[in-house]
Amino acid sequence: MVELERRGIPTVIFTAQTFVHDAERTAASLGLPGLPLAVVPRPFTNQTPEGVHQMVEAAFEQVITGLTRPVAEPGPVDRPVLEERLTYDGEDMLVAWEAMNRDFRARGWSDGFPLVAPTERAVAAMLKGTKRAPGEQIATLEPGFGIATVEKLATNAVMAGAGPEHLPLLVAAVRCLAEPKMYIRNKAMSTGPHAPLVLVNGPQGRYAGLNAGMCALGPGAPSASNTVLGRAVRLTMMNVGHTYVGVSDMDTIGSPLKYSLCCAENEKESPWEPYHVARGFAQEASAVTVHFVYGMCELHDFQSTTPERLIKVFATAATNVAQVGTGLWLIGRRADPRYKTEEKEHNTLFICPEHAQIFAKAGWGRREIQEALHRAARLPFETLMLNKEPKAMAVAHPELSWLHDHPDLPLPVVEDAACYDIAVVGAAAGRGAYFYGAGEPVTMPVED
Image (cartoon, rainbow, N blue to C red):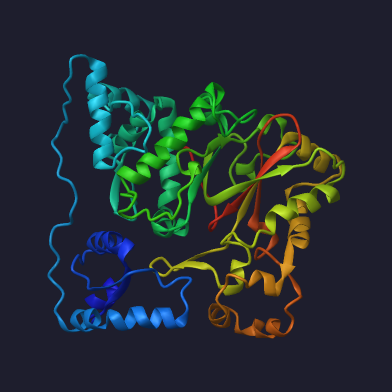
């Protein structure tokens, strides 16, 4: 819409009342804060055509005004102007710290948990974890186009309770977030519960003390490193990328996974090459993978002793049509036209060591699991299209129009076998996890 206005084409956005702040802030971030809105009481989703028509007709005067009134010249973006240093007083240090946390929550900088004070001394200590200069720019983070300098990342890492050993991992994770294929604006601003799943491989993860075994996704002291690194990623998204609740993050319900979702792969108990090697990195390298996921489902199986039986169980988790990515390939891929990037919908499986050994003893590697799951995880075309727009399919895949005459034909829930990503995580007993993904994972090396 902003680009159309810049090209002299009058534009109005229909915006539900709940999303007005979001629309105004986004337009300002994109350099056109006066972009016209036509405000309607509710989103157009889940409405009958008659209901949509009624809302449009009621807002029609706003449309006319927006199309005929010049858009105001861009002014300064409404962002807080801060003092160089913030100071908090109290009768003792604890009271001052509590005052800091109250103020940070009020400003929207907090994830809701108590924050470690990012004092000058604490940030300086954090910066010892890298050889990079504090002012070095790592990335520009959408949706707010914040400049992610090393010092800003260090500040958010301190707030999360991380140590210097976590900073190189955070740098790599932020580079993943900024990769165009990640299309982070979509994930950060969605009404969905997109959470960044962070998977660490290599010696840097072991040095940082990340847990890959029992209760790897927390909570508990063994997963403290996992928790603080995942939390640092979320705080960076908020305070550098401006992914603030109610401002750009419009998540309908939210998710506890968004606080922290981070672990290392259990390379020691994996029968296969490490996950990052499968993605093209050297065995001795350290790497961080970020994959945005909607949610997770348990992969519980205490009975199966063959790969074929395990695949049947795993496939029941994959065939969840209430998840956005299930069958999404039928209506096209996610695309960011600015960078000419497209991404397939991937799902991630954390296979526990016990299940991994069953596959490996039968001679199965990741590829065999992927192909078998792609064959097994299928649903009738009619079922896959329950929450999909037929018109979108007609645009994306006109060559598949014949499917409407075969509603019972089973189709794969993902585009191809490679859309299943597999890592070995966890401890004893037959319990893994299946993550419903949004787009593709991105992996970056840890360079410090």
